[in-house]
Image: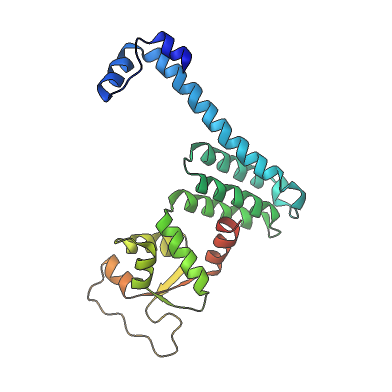
Length: 218
């Protein structure tokens, strides 16, 4: 910053100042921005690899040393270098370690871990709150839409549930899910995405439980 300040007449204090300097001193600003970004990204990756190094003595499966395992690491490294939230970076680190410790078939591990990596990218805190609530309720418990809406604190809870239940398969939703009495028949009224979600009961799937244990719990 000191070097940049000596090469510029004044440091910007307003938006107008910034854009004026941007056009007048673009090469200097671009160089310093690139150096700042590189240093920031390297710091994020250093933290990731320090975390991984602390778990290398726990490897039990073949996945860690496989091509698929290295490809997953490449995916995660790319995402971590770009991710601005510390919580998500930790979730990515948890995913790598849990995948390296997994002793299931290599391709099965990779497919699920890649799905989880995309979920980490997509999910907001509201998504996570819903999944954690369903996890705490256990697989055989059916949770109503309104309850999940309160947990998530989001008026568009049906969009979150579409991601969780539809795209990533971390929870099930249906009329009369896990009820002992006969479920009500689905009728053709109010079949909008929100209307469907509001009339469904929700329960976490085995994959959803693995997402919590492998990604959120670490």
